[in-house]
Image 1 (cartoon, rainbow, N blue to C red):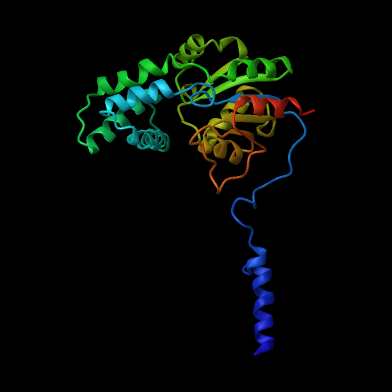
Image 2: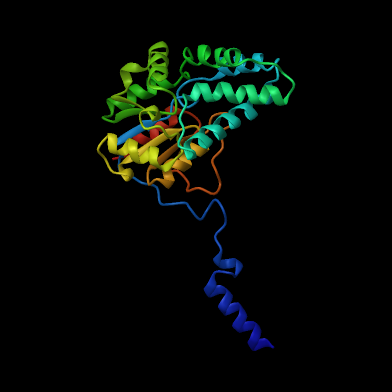
Length: 260
């Protein structure tokens, strides 16, 4: 009996069944921190660079003041952007957002037309301010020799207007919108496309984002990542761990500038 037990434990260890050989979630994907600089820094826009408070207030107003429905609205918008992607369909992200808002409203007994839903999203999102530390941090990164590229699910016209109104246009070498390839992040094709557009390899790209799903998509595509843990933002425990995790862009910039 003792010999049988020893044989079972030995076989289990070899197969990775014994508890000691199974890595815990959140630690298995950790890598040694990189010390070399990526060739290009890609930046998500909404929430990462721009403060969404005004848009959230507008959406909550359309939902009869139901602030508790805001997370549901955002996840519904993201869900149907991915539904569109896997079905080879494309609509402007704001249009999908308006449709998602109608769905959430209908499920909660709130009457909302498409035009009303669209107006509550499109108007405020185009005039969002940057988070307080963003402009100075982008300037520091640019002065340090980095190439800065915005990379967003929003339309070309939308992000052009956003950057103009927020005063961020001058910091970026290029703006990339998934509108030009018809799929939404975090589909792996979007990150591959962005790397090709900049004529670099995936491992030479680093995404700065405040969304766990976006960082996960980039890391799975072979990119590097810097996560900004703004209020309510969480990383996905089943994805690789980004090399940088800070509370704001200033602290991310400090880390990036220190790389050699």
